[in-house]
Length: 251
Image 1 (cartoon, helix red, strand yellow):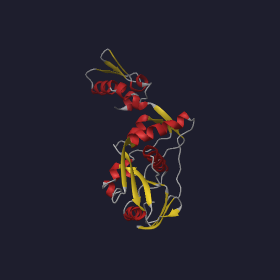
Image 2: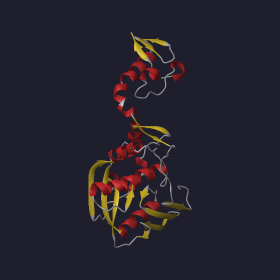
Image 3: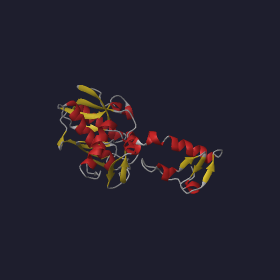
Image 4: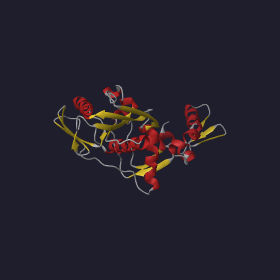
Protein backbone atom coordinates (compact mmCIF):
# COMPACT_ATOMS: atom_id res chain seq x y z
CA UNK A 1 0.00 0.00 0.00
CA UNK A 2 1.30 3.46 -0.92
CA UNK A 3 2.21 5.19 2.35
CA UNK A 4 2.55 8.53 0.57
CA UNK A 5 -1.13 8.45 -0.41
CA UNK A 6 -2.50 6.94 2.80
CA UNK A 7 -0.09 7.74 5.64
CA UNK A 8 0.21 4.02 6.43
CA UNK A 9 3.17 2.99 8.60
CA UNK A 10 4.34 -0.33 10.01
CA UNK A 11 1.95 -1.37 12.80
CA UNK A 12 2.80 -2.72 16.23
CA UNK A 13 0.54 -4.88 18.35
CA UNK A 14 -1.25 -1.91 19.93
CA UNK A 15 -1.43 0.78 17.24
CA UNK A 16 -3.16 -0.88 14.28
CA UNK A 17 -5.83 1.84 13.76
CA UNK A 18 -3.25 4.62 13.94
CA UNK A 19 -0.81 2.84 11.63
CA UNK A 20 -3.14 1.21 9.10
CA UNK A 21 -6.40 3.13 9.43
CA UNK A 22 -9.90 1.67 9.86
CA UNK A 23 -12.76 0.20 7.84
CA UNK A 24 -15.94 2.13 8.67
CA UNK A 25 -19.27 1.56 6.93
CA UNK A 26 -17.75 0.21 3.69
CA UNK A 27 -15.26 3.05 3.58
CA UNK A 28 -11.55 2.76 4.30
CA UNK A 29 -10.33 5.75 6.33
CA UNK A 30 -6.56 5.97 5.98
CA UNK A 31 -4.30 7.27 8.78
CA UNK A 32 -4.01 10.62 6.98
CA UNK A 33 -7.81 10.94 6.87
CA UNK A 34 -8.26 10.21 3.17
CA UNK A 35 -11.32 8.04 2.44
CA UNK A 36 -11.45 5.21 -0.10
CA UNK A 37 -14.72 3.60 -1.21
CA UNK A 38 -15.22 -0.16 -1.15
CA UNK A 39 -14.84 -0.47 -4.92
CA UNK A 40 -11.28 0.90 -4.86
CA UNK A 41 -8.12 -1.21 -4.97
CA UNK A 42 -6.79 0.65 -1.93
CA UNK A 43 -9.86 -0.38 0.09
CA UNK A 44 -9.33 -4.05 -0.86
CA UNK A 45 -5.67 -4.05 0.14
CA UNK A 46 -6.35 -2.19 3.39
CA UNK A 47 -9.19 -4.54 4.33
CA UNK A 48 -6.92 -7.56 3.87
CA UNK A 49 -4.09 -5.98 5.86
CA UNK A 50 -6.34 -4.97 8.75
CA UNK A 51 -8.07 -8.37 8.83
CA UNK A 52 -4.87 -10.33 9.43
CA UNK A 53 -3.57 -8.10 12.23
CA UNK A 54 -5.11 -10.13 15.11
CA UNK A 55 -3.23 -13.21 13.88
CA UNK A 56 -0.01 -11.22 13.62
CA UNK A 57 -0.32 -9.50 16.99
CA UNK A 58 1.68 -12.14 18.85
CA UNK A 59 4.59 -11.74 16.45
CA UNK A 60 4.66 -8.01 17.14
CA UNK A 61 5.28 -8.56 20.85
CA UNK A 62 8.37 -6.66 22.02
CA UNK A 63 10.63 -9.22 23.67
CA UNK A 64 13.62 -6.99 24.39
CA UNK A 65 15.81 -4.12 23.27
CA UNK A 66 19.18 -4.16 21.58
CA UNK A 67 21.83 -1.52 22.15
CA UNK A 68 23.01 -1.69 18.54
CA UNK A 69 22.13 -3.36 15.28
CA UNK A 70 23.76 -6.78 14.94
CA UNK A 71 24.41 -7.74 11.33
CA UNK A 72 24.57 -11.27 9.99
CA UNK A 73 27.32 -12.38 7.67
CA UNK A 74 30.75 -13.90 8.04
CA UNK A 75 32.15 -16.42 10.46
CA UNK A 76 32.92 -13.90 13.19
CA UNK A 77 30.19 -11.30 13.64
CA UNK A 78 28.35 -10.33 16.80
CA UNK A 79 25.05 -11.89 15.72
CA UNK A 80 26.40 -15.30 14.75
CA UNK A 81 28.65 -15.36 17.83
CA UNK A 82 25.63 -14.60 20.04
CA UNK A 83 23.69 -17.49 18.58
CA UNK A 84 26.44 -20.11 18.34
CA UNK A 85 27.79 -19.42 21.85
CA UNK A 86 24.34 -19.90 23.33
CA UNK A 87 23.81 -23.00 21.21
CA UNK A 88 26.96 -24.58 22.67
CA UNK A 89 25.71 -23.94 26.21
CA UNK A 90 22.20 -25.19 25.49
CA UNK A 91 23.29 -28.41 23.78
CA UNK A 92 25.30 -29.15 26.93
CA UNK A 93 22.27 -28.39 29.10
CA UNK A 94 19.90 -30.50 27.03
CA UNK A 95 22.17 -33.54 26.69
CA UNK A 96 24.18 -33.43 29.91
CA UNK A 97 27.31 -33.76 27.78
CA UNK A 98 30.49 -31.70 27.73
CA UNK A 99 30.33 -29.57 24.60
CA UNK A 100 33.75 -28.27 23.63
CA UNK A 101 32.91 -26.83 20.23
CA UNK A 102 29.82 -25.59 18.41
CA UNK A 103 29.29 -25.17 14.68
CA UNK A 104 26.42 -23.32 13.02
CA UNK A 105 25.85 -22.25 9.40
CA UNK A 106 25.73 -18.60 8.38
CA UNK A 107 22.99 -19.37 5.85
CA UNK A 108 20.61 -20.37 8.63
CA UNK A 109 20.61 -16.80 10.01
CA UNK A 110 18.24 -15.01 7.65
CA UNK A 111 17.90 -11.43 8.94
CA UNK A 112 19.81 -8.96 11.10
CA UNK A 113 18.88 -8.01 14.66
CA UNK A 114 17.64 -4.40 14.70
CA UNK A 115 18.72 -1.68 17.07
CA UNK A 116 16.07 -0.71 19.63
CA UNK A 117 12.89 -2.73 20.10
CA UNK A 118 13.28 -6.41 19.24
CA UNK A 119 10.05 -8.13 18.24
CA UNK A 120 9.19 -11.80 18.44
CA UNK A 121 8.92 -11.62 14.66
CA UNK A 122 12.56 -10.51 14.43
CA UNK A 123 13.73 -13.75 16.05
CA UNK A 124 11.28 -15.95 14.14
CA UNK A 125 12.35 -14.36 10.85
CA UNK A 126 16.01 -14.66 11.81
CA UNK A 127 15.83 -18.41 12.48
CA UNK A 128 12.93 -19.70 10.35
CA UNK A 129 14.17 -23.23 9.70
CA UNK A 130 13.34 -26.38 11.66
CA UNK A 131 16.88 -27.03 12.84
CA UNK A 132 17.16 -29.31 15.87
CA UNK A 133 20.00 -28.90 18.34
CA UNK A 134 22.31 -31.89 18.14
CA UNK A 135 25.34 -33.37 19.89
CA UNK A 136 28.15 -35.22 18.15
CA UNK A 137 31.19 -36.87 19.74
CA UNK A 138 34.18 -36.73 17.39
CA UNK A 139 37.78 -37.81 17.67
CA UNK A 140 40.24 -34.94 17.32
CA UNK A 141 41.45 -36.16 13.92
CA UNK A 142 37.89 -35.95 12.58
CA UNK A 143 37.36 -32.54 14.14
CA UNK A 144 40.53 -31.34 12.40
CA UNK A 145 39.30 -32.76 9.10
CA UNK A 146 36.00 -30.92 9.54
CA UNK A 147 37.75 -27.59 10.09
CA UNK A 148 40.11 -28.26 7.17
CA UNK A 149 37.02 -28.75 5.01
CA UNK A 150 35.57 -25.43 6.19
CA UNK A 151 38.92 -23.74 5.54
CA UNK A 152 38.85 -24.96 1.94
CA UNK A 153 35.33 -23.63 1.43
CA UNK A 154 33.34 -21.25 3.63
CA UNK A 155 34.19 -20.81 7.29
CA UNK A 156 31.07 -21.07 9.42
CA UNK A 157 30.15 -19.57 12.83
CA UNK A 158 31.91 -21.49 15.59
CA UNK A 159 32.25 -21.44 19.37
CA UNK A 160 34.84 -22.75 21.82
CA UNK A 161 37.70 -22.53 19.35
CA UNK A 162 40.43 -20.26 18.02
CA UNK A 163 40.88 -20.74 14.29
CA UNK A 164 43.50 -19.20 12.01
CA UNK A 165 43.15 -19.67 8.26
CA UNK A 166 45.97 -18.86 5.86
CA UNK A 167 44.16 -18.51 2.58
CA UNK A 168 42.18 -21.73 2.23
CA UNK A 169 44.47 -23.68 4.53
CA UNK A 170 43.86 -24.39 8.22
CA UNK A 171 46.86 -22.92 10.01
CA UNK A 172 45.74 -23.15 13.67
CA UNK A 173 42.92 -24.84 15.56
CA UNK A 174 42.77 -24.51 19.33
CA UNK A 175 39.96 -25.93 21.46
CA UNK A 176 39.75 -24.47 24.94
CA UNK A 177 43.06 -22.74 24.24
CA UNK A 178 44.90 -26.01 23.48
CA UNK A 179 45.93 -27.74 20.24
CA UNK A 180 43.60 -30.50 19.13
CA UNK A 181 44.63 -33.99 20.29
CA UNK A 182 43.89 -36.37 17.39
CA UNK A 183 43.08 -39.22 19.80
CA UNK A 184 40.86 -37.31 22.21
CA UNK A 185 37.07 -37.33 21.84
CA UNK A 186 35.50 -33.86 21.66
CA UNK A 187 31.88 -32.88 22.17
CA UNK A 188 30.42 -30.85 19.30
CA UNK A 189 27.15 -28.94 19.39
CA UNK A 190 25.46 -28.29 16.06
CA UNK A 191 22.13 -28.56 14.24
CA UNK A 192 20.75 -31.61 12.48
CA UNK A 193 20.93 -29.85 9.09
CA UNK A 194 24.74 -30.00 9.24
CA UNK A 195 25.00 -33.64 10.28
CA UNK A 196 24.89 -35.18 6.83
CA UNK A 197 25.61 -32.81 3.98
CA UNK A 198 23.86 -29.53 4.76
CA UNK A 199 26.03 -26.63 3.52
CA UNK A 200 28.45 -29.37 2.37
CA UNK A 201 29.28 -30.31 5.95
CA UNK A 202 29.06 -33.81 7.41
CA UNK A 203 29.53 -33.12 11.10
CA UNK A 204 28.32 -36.60 12.07
CA UNK A 205 30.78 -38.44 9.81
CA UNK A 206 32.72 -40.92 11.99
CA UNK A 207 30.68 -39.86 15.05
CA UNK A 208 31.40 -41.79 18.22
CA UNK A 209 28.04 -40.69 19.58
CA UNK A 210 25.11 -38.76 18.12
CA UNK A 211 22.15 -37.18 19.91
CA UNK A 212 19.49 -35.22 18.05
CA UNK A 213 17.38 -33.36 20.61
CA UNK A 214 13.73 -32.38 20.20
CA UNK A 215 14.59 -28.68 20.70
CA UNK A 216 14.60 -26.36 17.71
CA UNK A 217 17.25 -23.66 17.53
CA UNK A 218 14.55 -20.95 17.54
CA UNK A 219 12.97 -22.50 20.65
CA UNK A 220 16.35 -22.38 22.36
CA UNK A 221 17.08 -18.78 21.36
CA UNK A 222 13.71 -17.21 22.21
CA UNK A 223 13.82 -17.64 26.00
CA UNK A 224 17.49 -16.67 25.95
CA UNK A 225 16.73 -13.45 24.06
CA UNK A 226 13.83 -12.68 26.39
CA UNK A 227 16.02 -13.23 29.46
CA UNK A 228 17.91 -10.01 28.72
CA UNK A 229 14.81 -7.88 29.33
CA UNK A 230 13.93 -9.93 32.40
CA UNK A 231 17.37 -9.05 33.79
CA UNK A 232 17.00 -5.39 32.77
CA UNK A 233 19.77 -5.62 30.18
CA UNK A 234 19.88 -4.76 26.48
CA UNK A 235 20.68 -7.48 23.97
CA UNK A 236 24.29 -6.98 22.92
CA UNK A 237 27.23 -9.17 21.99
CA UNK A 238 30.75 -9.01 20.64
CA UNK A 239 33.29 -10.11 18.09
CA UNK A 240 36.64 -11.55 19.13
CA UNK A 241 39.59 -13.44 17.68
CA UNK A 242 37.88 -16.84 17.46
CA UNK A 243 38.27 -16.79 13.65
CA UNK A 244 41.23 -15.07 11.99
CA UNK A 245 41.35 -15.24 8.20
CA UNK A 246 44.49 -14.15 6.37
CA UNK A 247 45.05 -13.91 2.66
CA UNK A 248 41.45 -14.05 1.46
CA UNK A 249 38.50 -11.70 1.19
CA UNK A 250 35.79 -13.44 3.28
CA UNK A 251 36.90 -12.21 6.69
